[in-house]
Amino acid sequence: QKEVEQDPGPLSVPEGAIVSLNCTYSNSAFQYFMWYRQYSRKGPELLMYTYSSGNKEDGRFTAQVDKSSKYISLFIRDSQPSDSATYLCAMSVTLGRLYFGRGTQLTVWP
Amino acid sequence: EAQVTQNPRYLITVTGKKLTVTCSQNMNHEYMSWYRQDPGLGLRQIYYSMNVEVTDKGDVPEGYKVSRKEKRNFPLILESPSPNQTSLYFCASSLVSTSDEQYFGPGTRLTVT
Image (cartoon, rainbow over all chains, first blue to last red; front, side, top):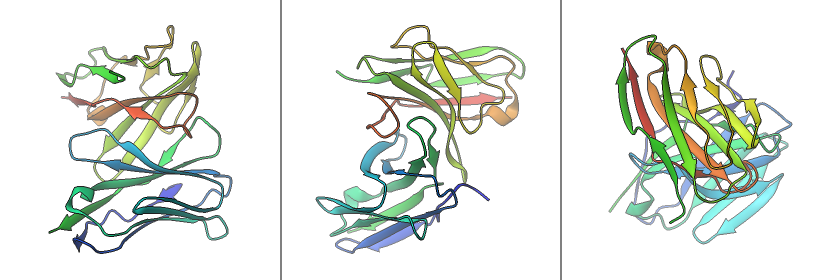
């Protein structure tokens, strides 16, 4: 079993939709949780970072961490075609080794 | 301009021929890391370095070597490449750790025949 599980999709939604992306994990020691966005032929870029449990909001993006369920989510409100990308969750125990999910490919069509 | 550079961007080589992929950052970052990305497997960490002369294994270190002799450079060495090391490789750096924003390089596409 992989440390981090993420449904690869693909996910296709109309512009303006609310998008929900999720990851589950098996290691209860994870305490740093991140979401990265990767456009085609580019390196990933950090979108959201959360330490331990709770919610974090940044514009149209909300990250949630539920440590009791070992489940993290990323919500995108009012999705735009420019949000079309692959979204990767990542998490770590210590401040060095990082575990990524497989990534979910999202397409937002006009 | 703040950036992470990797060279070469594309490389086709043969089994067993030693190669080095260079990575350099100009942001005075302490932390650097190497990843490989494969279809269906996502990003997997190969090695990381918390500072000069301090390196540690990631998820998939077998068949790879690294060194951190200078803060700005973190080369990835494949002593005897094999076809299963055909992949897209990314170098990344951040100020202190994985919890800081990591800046990724443009990627190196390696094919081993």
